[in-house]
Image (cartoon, rainbow over all chains, first blue to last red; front, side, top):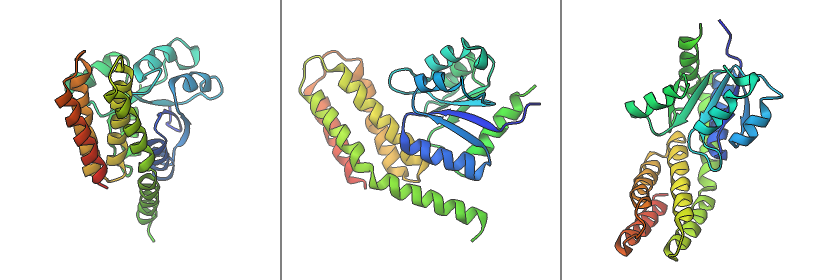
Length: 128
Length: 107
């Protein structure tokens, strides 16, 4: 089973980026590479091979689902696990995001003390 | 100070920074709403205002400002209803203005 160490995190809001970074690095002991847009993430994956991609759904320009579709076209991230982060977490919405290829969905707003645990759990449940 | 206390202290510090920067978010919302009010083909401004509120709703709750987050989400949903309407009723637009003012008074 692949170990979860490096996460590529795509979120346009700097405040949310800041608290998620604290939650995942300080609380969770993970390493985060943060990007502010889908375009930036597509450029970043050439230089880092994340174990997991955390993707905000609603972003200006390229939204989360579009970014996921573009990431899947790149050999480096064709099969990288992805978790969406969104406020839209009704059952049908979660099912839709999973149908796009996501492991799961983290609800926003999130609890900074529990975020890393949630992410690790989704990652380990889906790992072969 | 335990590990959890140290983390909580960091969260509290980040929350202070977030609160200190709220005025920037409100200024952007007010500017977008002014353009929405101006009329004409301003669908993009309504979408931008919706996005700003969505973003605030997600951030506020994560910093522990639950009431602010709930109010932001309330206005976000009001705007979502309006987005599909080509001719927005002035009364509905006024309601958004009032809700935005209430949101900003939360802090």
